[in-house]
Image 1 (cartoon, rainbow, N blue to C red):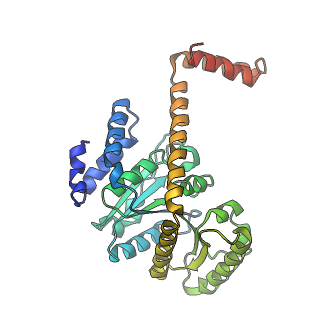
Image 2: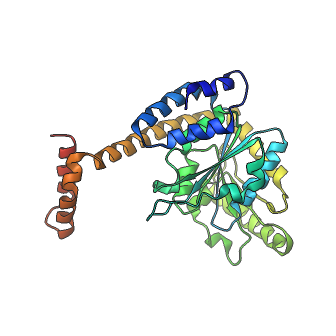
Image 3: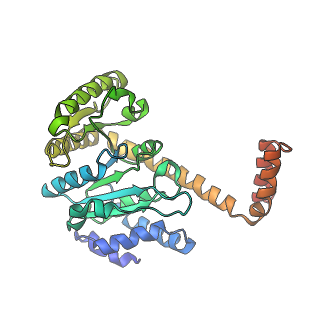
Length: 326
């Protein structure tokens, strides 16, 4: 990947999807030479980033995230925008493989020339979020995509991870049955800027309205007045494309308010700082685990901890001294 492939973007033209795919592959590489090249590329394109709305979407498996993202993405494209979807695929903890099937689950969106879908394996990253998702967002923005959607695997910790890298966090729900408020963690509801009850069609339409009412009431308790944005609860039918216009208007309203009061700029600045420290932690841990002295002593040290012959703190201090060559 060379910087020259990104020169057209500076002249107001669009970077090809092929070039974007190659750039994201470069930043996802763990090779040291690739990482140096990737960081140089990111520094080059950074001035062309930041003009999009970054949306995180989460929800339990089966809630219809892919169907919703496709319907919403196509609607937004009709309004004259370009949409990039970064879908985090769950990786196998045994083989490291992942499903990477989002392009088949969003076939219409994937074929649209104004859309770009990138499934990335989580590869064991904390929270199920690909480590380079933040950098992939910057590349998509530099390539001309002004609506960036990050889809989580919906497995618990990923919600917080994604909420900390986007502007707007969206929680997708099903009409369900029983006491819906017991079926979702309080913390996730507190993170949400918008709650969407999907599959509000047919026999489930009335039930979807009840769920919307329940969550609207819950938000009044969980989210205090005086915040920059008061979260909303809406219904939609992604299968039939119903409710997409109202959702897009809500997204635009959110973006307008947050940009006007400076909250979005401030939030992104803090996210960037947190991103830096996260990179430091993960890089140091990676180098620690691959240090020749550590690999030679780690099994023996861990066994002594398991047997109870060495306190964990002392064992950690010993390995750290080896790492620091003290």
